[in-house]
Structures are given as C-alpha cells and as structure tokens.
Image (cartoon, rainbow over all chains, first blue to last red; front, side, top):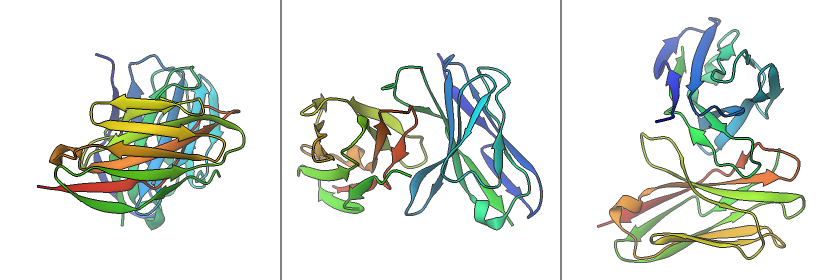
Length: 113
Length: 112
C-alpha cells in the first residue's frame, strides 16, 4: 500500500543546531507540504512543493528550508533551531487534482531546548 | 494568509445526541472546502472534499453542507458515539492554488 512516512518521530535538540526532518511518500504525488501544529493555531503551512525542483514558502517559513530533488522526498531543514520551533510537524502529499485530499504522515515531534 | 474560522473550539456531547459545528471561509475566489478528522495520536484523515454551492456529503453518521455564497460549511454528527471523539478540521482552497489553509479545529468529546 502507498504511504507517507516521517522520520524521526521524536527528536530533542539544542538551540542553534541544524535539524532535518525527513518525509517520504510512495503515492507518486506531485504535491508535498509541510505543516506545523501549535495549540490554538491548527495546522500552519511552512513550505510546499508542486514537483521536482519546485519549492515555495508558506505562511510560517522563516527559519525553515526544503528541497525537492525527487518525487518521493521533501526534507524539512531547520538551519538554526530555536525554542519557538518546538512543535509537531506534519508532512502531507496530494495528487495534481486541485480538489485532491491531503494524505498526512504521522507527525514528528520536535523539542528545542 | 486566508482566514478560516471554526466554531466552537470544543464541545462535549452525550452519547446518542446529535451535534453540528461551523467552518467559515472567504466567500470570494472559492475552489474547494475540505473536512478532516483527526484522532488523538494519529494523523488527519480526509472526510469530505466539497466544491459546489449547496453540496451535501455523507459518510455514515457524519454529513456536511456547503454554502459558498456566504462562506460557511456545517459538519453534522448524528447519534454521536465515543469513537466520534476527535478534532475536526476544515480547510479552504482558493481558485488559484492547491494548498490548503486550515482552521484551528473543533474538538468533539463524546461522553458515554
């Protein structure tokens, strides 16, 4: 069965460290998204990609970057982790249909000390 | 940033009772409205994708309606069961884009 997986599921790091969260999907979807979940805010879009070599900033992109070198993967990098980036991160993908539903990974809980 | 509002933020329902809650979104430039169900310790799963004014969707005891002219959607749960306890997210997609803007969710707790 097709799926979308995130790793690591849990990570604790220190302020200033670089952190990369991996996202891998086997749906062969063109569209991939990174969201963060914070209390009272629901899901907020960090970065997204509509295909290989395409990346775009979402509403809360400061301090984050992504790259899309193939269809399956969209890693999210925190260049210099800050305590404000402590959150649960969700990766999602969808097909090229504008009404296509999102398929979510299981989330990565990041704590920045 | 597109303003998607959900109300109430949370509600408690007695088992067997029916309930409903609201998602409001920009009525201009509408393309699609999604509903997702998000159980604790799991990832969100799609319930409905709605595109047409007047759309009604149903899945088991859960149904949704859409009014694109006034910018709102209702989600209904009929005869609530404990397994309906979850956070229900709505998300709006404008005509120009595939990406979704999510509301903060309505958390439903069904008491046995």
